Image (cartoon, rainbow, N blue to C red):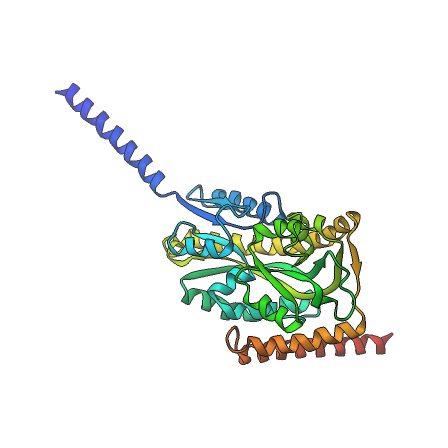
Length: 348
């Protein structure tokens, strides 16, 4: 009888241990994270660092599995996969974010910002509004990703007034903001997915593209052009979002960890990207890309066309109320700087 009891006790212990192990496995949540950015780029490197920290901070309860380099498709493909829970989280450019919430594309309105400080102030003040909009669509907005300022790149010298009407510009498929922008500028566009830009440049389908310097370097697009118009056109905004149902199913502790780490690494990525943009300019220059400056007449034309783009974007993409709110924020910020500069000059 004692032997029988011992056997039963051992079996119970074995099954209990097996059950514990099974529960431990079941409690590990795999979150698939997609990005169109190539492996080895600052963006994917940061994602992998974040994945390591998430695993450590959650005690292995959450594992981020990174799908980089566009293996999950273009951003529109990623969104479709997020809707059916094949992908649970992703880092998006403004194009992807705009599919879910068009009004966030106001952050990429042409010639809206004069410097990165203005970008940071406006984004911070509008964060809660955008986060609410994503929540209503079933997503958690976990942080901004800033690509920096976008420039025009071309095989042709586009620094002369009227030269933009002669180019064949790449248009990211589904990028409504860029389409309005280029139409306002009188630029002919040819829609292509990101993965097809190199082929388009090689075959001559396009001879120009728009990009931040670091992306032009990371995707190797710069080898097929000769000029960069050294005039910042728009600020490239992005963000990191997660399927809300997946996020809500996490423990409160792990939700807090995800929020904290995502915010931390989004800030790190913004800092890294801005530094990488400066380094990328050196890479482009060493490769023979010429930085050309538009004359005053062309800049005035840019400003006139930007105003047309604003009007064409309202109200389908963003409301006049939101646009006016941003303009008020910028007026206040610029007035504060003028007052500060005047005070400094008076002291000196």
